[in-house]
Image 1 (tube, rainbow, N blue to C red):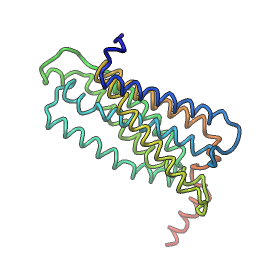
Image 2 (image 1 turned 60 degrees about the vertical axis):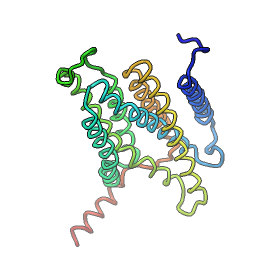
Image 3 (image 1 turned 90 degrees about the vertical axis):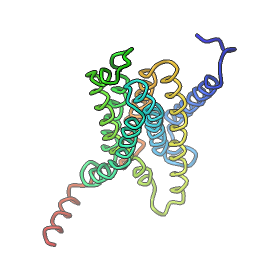
Image 4 (image 1 turned 120 degrees about the vertical axis):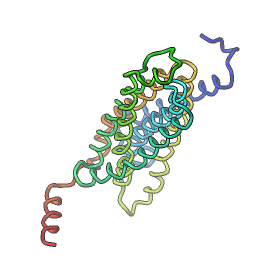
Length: 262
């Protein structure tokens, strides 16, 4: 273990980020164990969504911080290939929520869509931790390794999972409040603070582990973060007060009848 006197700037930044993450977890524990319906003037459900989204962003931005380096240094893609794969991946992550939002609105409901997306994301991040053969300097040999298929599958799972989760979790935030509730804007501000906290801590901690200890350590931490977010979301279902559930069958039947009548 490195002596603290030998720590460099990166080590100190990672340590501070780890302490901040521990503090965030402690606050989350306090909120989770409270019996009141509200915390700091907002429904407890808001903070369930805050922590679920924080961990999702932790895993997503942490993994993204490593991705292009992983493509170039581990899978030995050249710069243009790495940039193309990275660009295609990030583009699809932002396109798929259109489909995820549509499916949730029509059939699944936002809560089930977020749950499904979280499970798929957790699998994707954990599969990213599977490494192929080591010590190969020939790109052709490296990219012929069957383990690269696990990598492609992991990227596909993260893209699909993001499509379901990203499009729907913020919708549930709005559903916790009446349209005329003055707290609604503040709720979204709190929610997006979770996005920023997760993104910052994930980039630092996942990036640090991946570059200093090993790729699988970094990607594994991203996967653990997503699992924590999923656990919080599942355990916090009662705090959501039935919001984000599928459309009522009667309403769907009425829609179909109106469509048939023109």
